[in-house]
Image 1 (cartoon, rainbow, N blue to C red):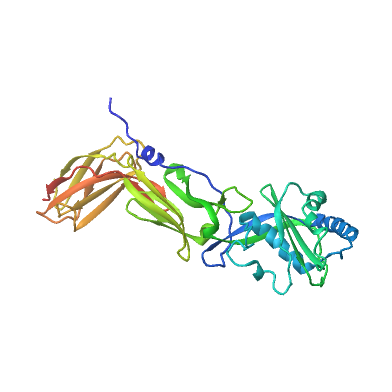
Image 2 (cartoon, rainbow, N blue to C red; image 1 turned 90 degrees about the vertical axis):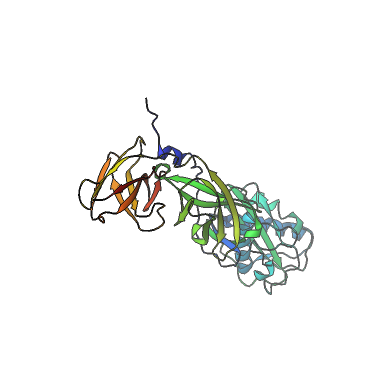
Length: 370
């Protein structure tokens, strides 16, 4: 009994991974923009600040007024520290100084930020205790409490300036765009999602940042480029990868400005070893030849016949595509009389998006055309 071979089986052996994604456009060179769609718990802030001021009164220290500008800054920072926290210099995720967000606010106290373990006013009160008995020169405060992916972070910033206007505080949906420097990614990897029954792969890049949120985030592909060290083995087109032949190659994930994120070296040694058998090539009529072949490749979708007057197929090559897995013969016409033609055949599978995966070529046969 003949062994049944499968081109698709070999192709599918290399496919894995599932990912999710966000979308935004990076504004900072060397940084990727991540959109975090979460919840801002502004509704608990006033109660927590009222409690803080009651404690400050007990110590004879001036009360802190909520300021709209500081609140907007704190809310943005509460989202930023999800992805990157700097406990030494308090720099932002893109590498810039916190001073780029707090100009002319005369902030003399170190900002407060960390995780919260709930979303009530009591949870926030317990984090503001360091402001209860110090900072007599402070007059205004801004606080942000942000929840994303089940993680809650808070950020508080105080100023010696008098509050200019009170914020409108509410618990609401909050969408934050955070630019994160690639250098602040702690782990990254290229992921491959099986598509079209395993005939090609959708590429994506997963990253874990140096912040409070430690789950993998899929970077927006519209900010990335993927490159392969050998496109003859693995072709990349429109964020998809198509396996073409065996061997080792490296795939690179980069930002549009060329900043490298990560790479992945892969090796295939089970792909396209199958091939059809060229049975005969005969010329019974002028300027024509008939090609016959056999194949036991179960999932083949068609065949490609290549013929040339060059023995090594280095030039003068022509091809005929024969659609359908059951076809086993084709007559080719309009050939040159008395010429010797070299012929070979291979099978193919439609990978999708105009791409094909091929078997190896059959052995070559020659014929002199009448």
